[in-house]
Amino acid sequence: MQSRVLGILLLVQLAAAATPQTIQLQSRAAPKAATLRRRALNPVTVALSDFFLGTDLQWFGNISIGTPPQTLTVVFDTGSTTLEVASTLCGTACSNQVQFNASESSTFIDEHTTNTISFATGVGVDPVVNNDYTLSLRSSVDTVAIGDLMAPSTSFFLITNQTAKFNIDPFSGILGVGATAENVFASFVNQGLPSLFSLFLTPLAVGNAELTLGGIDTTKFSGDLIFASLPANPRTTWSLASPQIFVNGETTSVLTASRNVIFDSGTSNILFPTATANAIYAIISPNIQPYAPEPGAYGIPCADIPSLTAVISVTFTDQAGLPFNLTIPTSELNVGPFAGNETICQTLINAFDGLSLLGGSLFKHYYSVWDVGNKRMGFAAI
Ligand SMILES: *[C@@H]1O[C@H](CO)[C@@H](O)[C@H](O)[C@H]1NC(C)=O
Ligand SMILES: *[C@@H]1O[C@H](CO)[C@@H](O)[C@H](O)[C@H]1NC(C)=O
Ligand SMILES: *[C@@H]1O[C@H](CO)[C@@H](O)[C@H](O)[C@H]1NC(C)=O
Ligand SMILES: *[C@@H]1O[C@H](CO)[C@@H](O)[C@H](O)[C@H]1NC(C)=O
Ligand SMILES: *[C@@H]1O[C@H](CO)[C@@H](O)[C@H](O)[C@H]1NC(C)=O
Image (cartoon, rainbow, N blue to C red):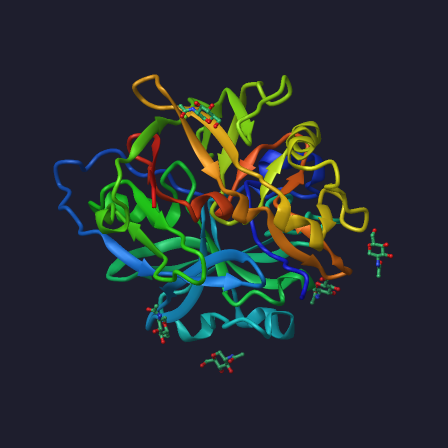
């Protein structure tokens, strides 16, 4: 098995410690006026493909940029807020990606500013080591379209170089959809699209994953959606306050601590501070140990995994003030053998001090609604 790289994401600003350079992301807030002039836009559903390497890593779908439109695939990443896509300026460093050619777009504007962005967390199942996930970017403006929704004059970034860790990505870029409407999504909302989106992120074997912009696809779940309000701060991050975590029905003093949990569709694993990760693993099996070659990752001999139980329930509070759990089943514990030692299988939780974050391993079990306008998130079991 290959090393499962990947991922992306997460608000670079959150992880200052590991971030060498943080760019101030340009963004535009959704204009507030114009409510009376808005016409409703219909929701658009985008089919998503699963980037699978032994485990489900990320889900990506089509957008287009430019005039005439050039089709590119992006990960719709709730852990970041900007759009960046591989461009022909990247050349061989992006040779595995479909590249946007700005010279072929009549509406393209080069904003000339260059910068780099280093992803500090949330990289698929692999921890970040030595800034190994870095993109070189050039600021730009062009028309971005998703389905029949069009966002003219939208700020984005051309990827002009990237570190080798990105080479295996089957998609061209990352479209950040944070908890405030920015860039592409802000444009749609200002044109009258309802200010929410929904994700149906299925395992590869199930397929039919999708993103619905501006609506909820009620055919994808049968139970009720439970909504929880976002905390007042930080406002651009999808996160909810959690009072405690249960593992196989047990909790401990370390796990009974309030924390803010980030929801990141661009990450497949779970991240918790080291003490929390250790407390969870102590309940599952003392044989799950840090994997030295990849600091932050844990593993156990692959032969030992099938006998383990690892039901992880993270408690939140709904809008009526009642507790509810989001639960990750045992089937997610095994992320697959490490590339460097195939007798050792990686386990789901990575240690990352300062962050608690849930990713695709949770979303595979819930239909999720990301309600930007009402500052809340909704979940229904699938
Ligand atoms: C994405 O775009 C490509 C190229 O235009 C097209 O072949 C493919 O069918 C599209 N995929 C989906 C899921 O719409
Ligand atoms: C980009 O488009 C221009 C104009 O059509 C073309 O001359 C150039 O070869 C293209 N670049 C690449 C790398 O395809
Ligand atoms: C692209 O990035 C790599 C590091 O990943 C670096 O070695 C190389 O010099 C860069 N290329 C350019 C043209 O900046
Ligand atoms: C959450 O899960 C724990 C452990 O299974 C359970 O004890 C608790 O009752 C659950 N809470 C709710 C609100 O379902
Ligand atoms: C793989 O890990 C096991 C257990 O730690 C160790 O005994 C073995 O030497 C390792 N193999 C390699 C190739 O590193």
